[in-house]
Image (cartoon, rainbow over all chains, first blue to last red; front, side, top):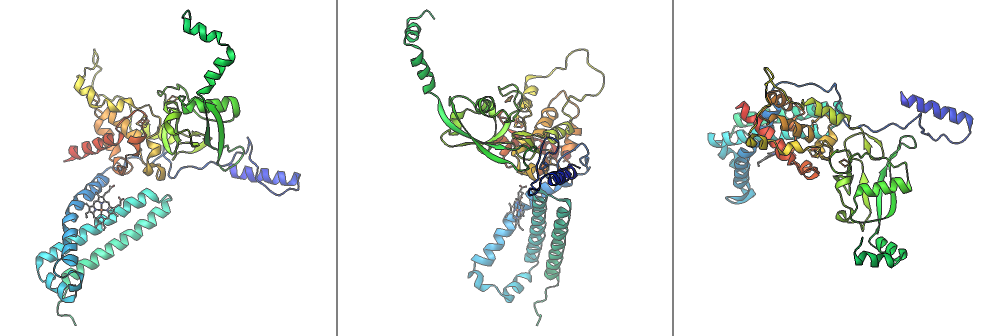
Length: 165
Length: 259
Ligand code: HEM
Ligand code: SF4
Ligand code: FES
């Protein structure tokens, strides 16, 4: 509403004087103020029952603890012990995945890291994306990528064939 | 007045004493973020140079500018003694009360920047729209909730029970904490530290019976779980409230009650 008033004022000014059309603000036509993103009002979405946010908060901490062991162990085995990176190859992976222990290790690491990372990025989107549309589409992209990666990884771990040609 | 020293000073003449009283004044620059929607849509910095006692406060400097240099300078203040909570502003990049910040403590050798607090709509100069802040405050029901009949005597509370929430009773609702929180800057739907502090004040009050309700409210999407433990709020609070600790205590109460 104030925007139309301003443009009208500018037009009137322009009709009166043939100067260049600078937008002038005055008491009756103040400039628009800059509102903060997603301002709280009396109509702010009311309590959404459920413990989802609490559960994700706990999950970040619990999965983090487990990831310390899984990820550091993984990095140690892959990159440091027994010749470092140079030993990694199809045969090395095939050898490890022959054991259910390493299958479970890698599966747990895949799921925990992906869900942990995805939830972390969800937090980042919630913190930084200002417009509802941006929030929605960024999250859709995130969830699609997460589901794809988790499913593909799980499929590979379970259907891995060491004799493939 | 009858002492010899004072008499001697008096006899030294008015010129001398005026010089003495002026000698402790220093010249400093206040760089203030000005915004007036009736003039321009853009905010800009304006420098004011003034002679002032370094033991004075930023609020005194603002007053001196408003009264002696530019009457249009707009800011809120009421009590001028750190009690009403109306003059929180961003001074040298940190949220403080202008009335509790001595000039000598914030390096008056360099220009002192003064801006409105962040995350709320700037209405004019240092004045922001506090409505979203108070909406979040109202949303946690900051009043005593009890069931059953009114007792005929006062509601007793042990000293230990009173101590449990003592820290959060000190809040003056200045918004220094909430407007220092990066989560609040980007998402005004977050309740913000001040609302949580004031919920904490009742959740841990042994006389209050609305704790469950308030915990439920803060368990929400925009409640305590959005806190990222940045500690900006604790640093900002002019009352020295351990704001982040209070938020963590609410989180813990939510978790322990549910398991
Ligand atoms: C190595 C052990 C790990 C621990 C102990 C750990 C712990 C945590 C914790 C406690 C948070 C929550 C922070 C908060 O709420 O403010 C977090 C956030 C996050 N984590 Fe991890 N994490 C680990 C590994 C990983 C891995 C492997 C990934 C990537 C897949 C990852 C990605 C993230 C992301 C994206 C966030 C959100 C960023 C943020 O909150 O600023 N983390 N982590
Ligand atoms: S907790 Fe401290 S900083 Fe926050 S509103 Fe209360 S007095 Fe101000
Ligand atoms: S003017 Fe009241 S708190 Fe500063």
